[in-house]
Length: 216
Image (cartoon, rainbow, N blue to C red; front, side):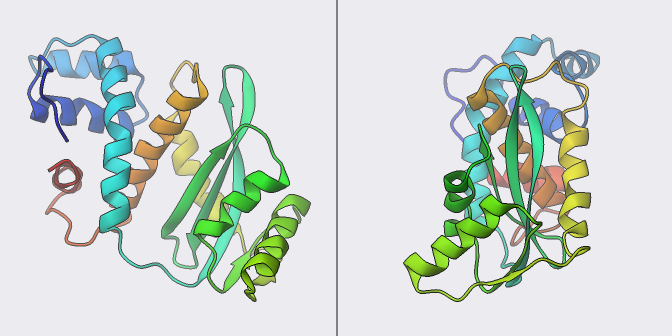
């Protein structure tokens, strides 16, 4: 993570970004916490840091993430962006480990289809969504795969419970003003969530240490 040209050292930037992604705090809350620690930085600057550096952290996490199981749960939740509901597709394995996620502007077959292409392996549990079912069937046909679709009534409880962590992280904000900002912020929240679930190979002694290792 290259912080050359910034007025603040890398350690300060990482600390502010971590506070935002780890806790249900607004940018102004993070500004206040940093001020209490003797660092005077505007909330808009912290927002720019999150926007700039979370894609890098996400990329590193994908390289260092441990293996997940082959039985997965796919479900979507709703995120409001500029007053419009968007769809956040998320997949976890049977142990609750995060597999992948995708934010889309609308619920349609191709959006759901683009997600499984990077994820599905053998068995996937979904709800009664016609778009998700159709997407997996198209994937099987195009890839000559035999992904087993399971629609167990309570099978998606794990991923539905996992949604709550993500929704809780953004509840105190004023809402996302752009789709790209929402996508980047949510990817950072997902990274921290994976660290919390100990999905990083060779993590640090503490969560923040693991977070900093991603930026090395």
